[in-house]
Image (cartoon, rainbow, N blue to C red; front, side):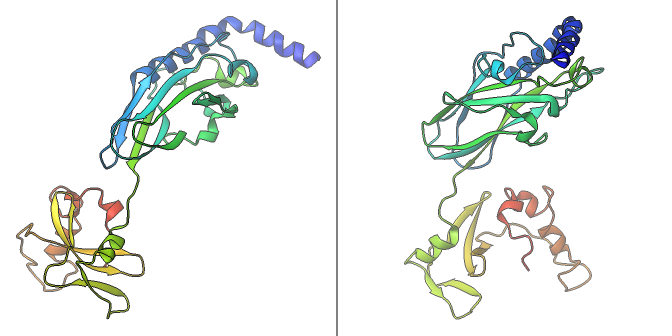
Length: 289
């Protein structure tokens, strides 16, 4: 009991300082969340809308008990799929660069709760979201015209010390990454098409043959033809239908290693082959020979 009184006296003695300095911290949170959004759409026909609502309101603006804060107003936003395909998405909470002279409140003394579609989540340490820039608020999938509505509450842990929180700020912004739900693998589609003649004489490769196979694939603004399927991992070997460059193979040797062709094929800049493909690290089998 004596320890409790002592803590109350300490909080009372720094009340004005806490209201001034920690109040500024949450004012910054309101400003940056409502004004600094990021949208990253990976692929497909997607149209995600991030709708902002009311701002964060703190009653006492001092470290508070979880049970008090989870019933207060928070920062509301919604994610809506107005595209024509099902969509997977992840919402992140990213740090914003501090101004000169500011010190960030460490995540270890911040708490949060997330309400989703009127279901209130339990209070947790902010560190359970992960570390910046990978603080994951939530991830889900949305059908066409689907919508998820959120309320995010963030507050200073009741047990935070003066040294940990007072005079410091927390600035953050929401970021959303979305991706198309993957359809059937290319290899499965090719193998199932009755227009293709499939040659399986090679135990490691399934070749697509015939006079007019249905093996056309459009990727990165180029037309390709599927040649074979590696049965070990279902990867598909493609060749371009068009001539896409005209360069000398090598100025000094007929070997591939060290040749001008090897350099151009592996060049990730806009002057090279890989640099002109969409996200080659995701779609290209980089260790293929």
